[in-house]
Image (cartoon, rainbow, N blue to C red; front, top):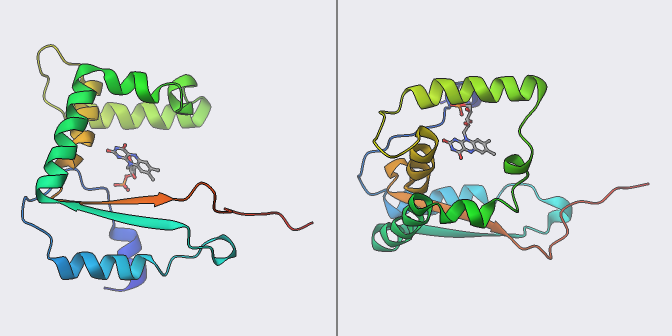
Length: 146
Ligand SMILES: Cc1cc2nc3c(=O)[nH]c(=O)nc-3n(C[C@H](O)[C@H](O)[C@H](O)COP(=O)(O)O)c2cc1C
């Protein structure tokens, strides 16, 4: 596939087949990912690949935190978006996104659609593999030349 075609045809997937992703495919993805540029070439990332039992257990624990409402207590103080709703054009785009997306979800008794969305996210929409990318906080991200 041509690069431009790939860029234009990509989209966020929110429903996955349960088939395991072959190990060679995961390895190839990591091999390609490590070619990404980084400030002063520090390459401060680490990748964690989660599949099968470990992934199920983590997801289960995460979904439970989301369902019980605990997750909101954990993330609320840290995430700007929860403290300050988007304004102007960004707010309008976000509202449009929420309307289009949440309208697709089936209503469920005792749950808001927003809650349902958080639960779906926590269960990775059923994706059979998860790659977590973390960056070392102590690594320099960027600097300004004066
Ligand atoms: C930084 C970032 C965070 C995102 N977070 C979520 C998320 O938590 N849940 C989700 O379903 N989609 C998430 N998305 C996907 C966006 O909603 C999506 O990219 C956007 O609506 C455009 O749709 P498209 O990717 O299909 O072109 C995120 C995308 C980015 C770039």
